[in-house]
Image (cartoon, rainbow, N blue to C red; front, side, top):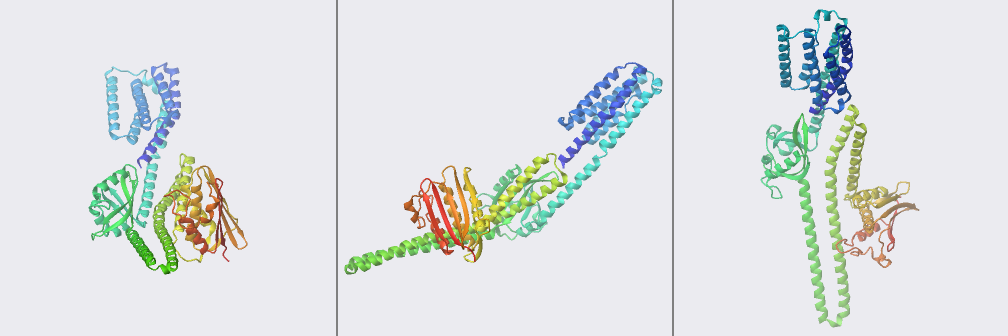
Length: 600
């Protein structure tokens, strides 16, 4: 609002400067025309100097500060009025002081206007006393001046100039102010509508207490709006947060950072009216409404999410405990059989056979344990990914709403730098679309369905995996897609196929040390779809190719891989009645070929 008023002030003073420059020129010419009747008077030189200063101000008006222009144009009119009064007594253009006072009244503080008005009246009184006492006299006879047509024309032009400046200089200021106030009301109404209809709780903090809130916030805290407003964060929080920090001190720090212009996003524990503690995800932002600064908080209840995460952790720990217990029992059985074999030497062959079977069983169990843990981790990752995608969607909706609001605003009101504004708005749109693509990929990756009857769009699945792995790519790694022109649909499990191509493309990215490229090709043949993922990375020795799908086999350094990715991928491809093939040469790259049957 204040910025808008400053713009209106600048517009008004610029208009006055231009009108003054245009309209005072004829008045100056007619004033100089008196020279032929009255002879040269030094005041003419003063008028010429003032007009040149006004002309320079008009030319460089965009480079001069608004406050300087107001002071200068006021000084010009002040000088014209006083010099005219001093030179021609009441025959001078002393009425210009009215315009000077009007400019000060509208565009500056009242105190400044009163001081300058008092100064002028004081000068007026001194000059009046000088003329009355005989100390001063007009530069020439006022009777002669009153019969000069050039003087009357000059005065007429001066009065006409004042009228035009009043009409066009000040006439639109009221309209502009009314328009500005109406715009502010419309924006406030839009904000209030979004504020009240939001699906999440929204609060406004001022001076550390709740200043306003929507109905969702009242529902979350179990307070009425009247009860909630005026309460501090300390009153609505337990004494300590999960990280053992005091709620009051931590809240003050977060609010201070937000007011300094650093948005905050974090998890917090609050208390309801009945004393129940609940978890929320909070986003804090600094906003200005009607020239007042507030901290806006958007609260999303994550209590159920926290409970689900805790249950999932307990389930995973219980599963690991059961697997470890079974492993110990089998190892104990193996030791028992070894001791028995020493006593029953005549049955050594049978015992050795049984021992071998037990070893194979133990190995298979360990492999199964590792795969179960991997599957459980993927399930946990799926749950977490779904939660992250959901959490991103909420602020993404606000971003999309802000983008639409900004686009509509600039379409309606325009912009002084439209080209820059369009680039910035388009950048926001590109960013939103990028985030939306990542969220879509996360949602597809997190599908937790064990069925094998879904329609799987192979191209879409590969694109989702590329989006999720985009941050793993170096700037010098090129992705080339050569997809078949028609849409490829197979029948299977979307989530599991995401896991397959995610593992294969991830391996391809890790195989590239410096400059490289990854080519993803698809083509249909007979009733199958063949997907080739080709990289020009370090490659694999031929003697290792047959071991790539064995559990725990890996060519990576210790700690960089588990050796289960391709093993699980191979199992998933077999579930889909497909095949997995590898072609590779050291220092030349690797070609992974996946063949899957098309949906009939």
